[in-house]
Amino acid sequence: MATDYLLFVHGVNVRESPRNEQLRNYVYADRLFALIAEKVQAQDPKRRLKKVPLYWGDVNRDSLSELRASLQGASVWNNLWFRDFRQNQLIPFAGDAALYISRHVGSLAVEQLAQQAIAGLQDYQPSDRLHLVTHSWGTVILFDVLFANRWLQAEVPESGRRSVDLIRRAIFGLPPEQSAGICLGSIHTMGSPIALFSLITITGQNHEEGSSHDLSSGFDGLLSHLERRLPWCNFIHPGDPVAWPLEKVIHQLIDHKSGVVMIEDVLTPGSGFLNLVGQLFQQSIVSIINGGNAHSSYWQSEKVAARISQIILET
Image (cartoon, rainbow, N blue to C red):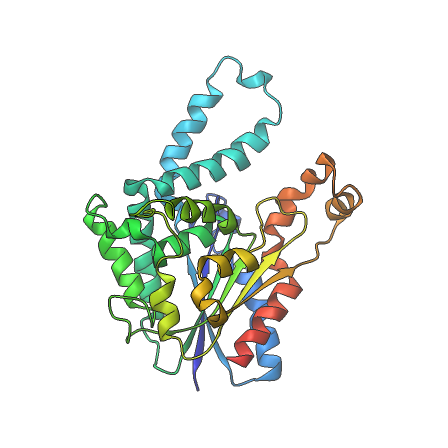
């Protein structure tokens, strides 16, 4: 019996070793994986699923702590509004994103991702399938690692190039060993800002050498080796300010092979009082109060789990 591997990549502000002892054994993907497994095995009890959660946020924890300390030491800090939101939401989001883009911290992150991914996938068999489930900035990181040209440049630390090479070799259809690796069964993005990064690609197309951060260039090799159409679900909570549609964007980037990818933007409902407030004032700035709740809602969503499980059963 084949095994379906679900590889999860989190967004910003997720750490592998929480300082809170009550959360020490918590894995961010636990709830969503349990929902998916329950739905898959309800229809096919013999179907085997394996969870592979990756972590990358620890590599810049010290840098963010130093930044917080510097900001809190400013004479005007106590006069600023929404300090908790600044410290616990804005700083981690901007910090994780900005530091990953740097060659040094980005290389540290992909080293960590490569070690975890290779360990999680080491027992795969030729008949197995890999399903990518990514959230927020994690969607950008994964596609950067799989497809971006910047990792081929000499300025990138050798450890980073080597780690990216290991990850790409592990997936069937990606160079440098396109005929080896586990077969990609489906892609699932949740609360993804990838659409915004398509601007890098569009800008790069105006120059002969293109852009080193082009997230689409590596698609050609992967899509050329797929034996069937690749399902891609992009989950969007209507109140999530980070989530953007991808259907038209991705097809524009890979126009000559657009028929190979079945990309679908899927709206997901929320719940709770804040979600109700957001619905009532959806075109007003008031709706932003539900933004954080909406952005994290995918990890507990029955609809997300149902759609992913359906695709797994069809592969």
